[in-house]
Image (cartoon, rainbow, N blue to C red; front, side, top):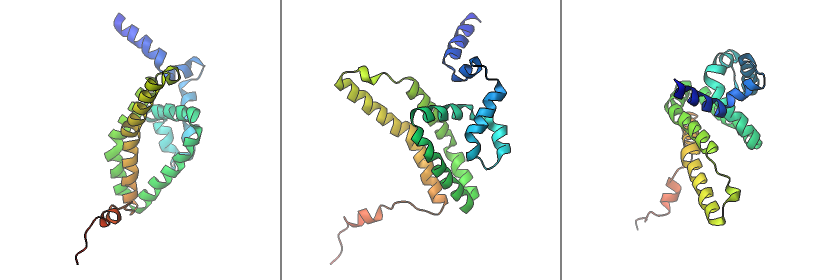
Length: 180
């Protein structure tokens, strides 16, 4: 049990939610902050209230981190929601199926985000060779592990909207030999 208490103590040091409680926020205050942050993105306020604490705390912490570090990125949320809502309007069942299909990879991507974010070294202290290696490693992990599942979902949603996206045919036709 003592080992468990040590692990719990370490977890509380790294758990960002506990910081809100230390600053005097109650669970209701945290829920209210989540609802305030995401209210403009939800069509059904009842759903937001129901899922704020059990399902959206991790997403909210990601949102706050991105808002703090990359505030301009928040503007893309509405654009992505527009794609989702248009796909849902055109074909609701395919849109929900697409989201369900990609949900596990999206969750894994969010988990990777936190791992990558929390394990970043201070690259400004590295020599130029190590800086380059670390920067390229982070770029590769970001593309492969973080962005790729979201881009696949967006492509799937565009297909639900009836858009096929870019075709390889025009590029391939340049390489075909026409018959005489």
